[in-house]
Length: 513
Ligand SMILES: CC(=O)SCCNC(=O)CCNC(=O)[C@H](O)C(C)(C)COP(=O)(O)OP(=O)(O)OC[C@H]1O[C@@H](n2cnc3c(N)ncnc32)[C@H](O)[C@@H]1OP(=O)(O)O
Ligand SMILES: CC(C)C(=O)C(=O)O
Ligand SMILES: [Mg+2]
Image (cartoon, rainbow, N blue to C red; front, top):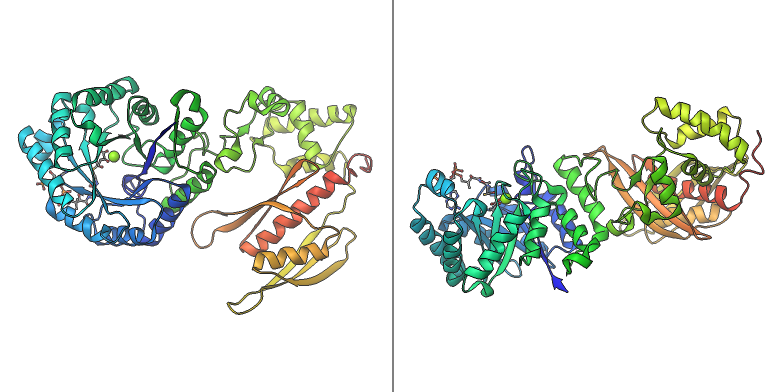
């Protein structure tokens, strides 16, 4: 199977998104995540652009070890020297140097003849190779360039020492068929092309960046450049998550793999969105909030019977805990009943009918029905579960570098008694969970624990998700609080309460109406 290298440029082209400015700490946080995601190359910035960017690239290059770190430079010695200053301590210093090749750019922007452009490009690559073992050369605006000229300049820069040749669709002008043909043309017309890796770099001005990147792969590109959430100059770049998941899901067609850990994608996307302040549209493929949400009755019924009826990507593949059946006015009886079962209520058919009619009436007035809405509906119908529900009253955690973490918790039991206990653990969360295990009638075996922040900045709320599996049922608990430890405790108690509702089967028989 072919291996496609993923060149992530979130920290360079992605940062060129209007209104985005990442400081060194933020860039480093993203870089570490990109490394964990498994990108082959990350472009950390444009060192000649500012002192801050130079420092950020330098820092990232000194810390990131499992992905190659690169930086962009114009075709002049000064930019290349700045890039060297930033990258010289990386494991394998790699430069990305570019020069425009289209008549429009050469005439109006660079004010150079084609021959002068060849001379400048070759000079820059030769100069760069005196320092950098790996030099990638990009033909800016390649897709509006004369292809014979493009082939000529590429042959020369490969001779000068470039080993990666990038073909940017700088202004997002081409379509997949044309873009693929450019790669075919270069493979057939550049005599030394086998000495280089061909790379694609697409912009989304006409909404074709991902399709163009995939076409390039079909036509010989072995590297694609992309950004998380597709952020980037103007309408953005090709989105990493869409390319990666398309390759994985359609492996039968593309017959190509990447090194990415796909289950890191969701968290990666959230981090970039939070630090850049660029929200992910809910309907965005793969990472949008609705990518795994089913709203209409026919779809929900299909998914409940067999997920693959309407899901080509499993949420778990990209690190989303589970799909979501959103209750709304388009929902049908199957989804409604399933929702009630998950909450622990099992009304018989006649009660379900009445509840469903009321639900539809309410849903007509609301965009989305929440768990609270459904509970309110059940309470209106005087349906109450007589199952034990525990409430977290307060929590205190002692943590210090040379101290054993200790948690003290107080819980309100279902019969209203206040109980208190304490336990230690190897970390604060473990201490909390050990305490809860002592206090609750049974302890939970967690299969997942995740933290994410709700909102941006220092005052963001912490949201913790835990998952347990019991009798083949997946039960998710969540807790939100200003503090991550309190949110962790709440999530555990939430999961425990839901487990009670499920496993004790106290739901319908003991519901008093
Ligand atoms: C397609 C892309 O995404 S390319 C990357 C775009 N990213 C950026 O521009 C972000 C960082 N840029 C910057 O901070 C600044 O533009 C700098 C520091 C690079 C340059 O700033 P300045 O020296 O003030 O020049 P300015 O940006 O106004 O103009 C660009 C100059 O570079 C020249 N230039 C453009 N591309 C190249 C190139 N690949 N090689 C050499 N020169 C180039 C232009 O012709 C122009 O030269 P001129 O001053 O002789 O007319
Ligand atoms: C610098 C190059 C690779 C670029 O970003 C573009 O042409 O879009
Ligand atoms: Mg670009």
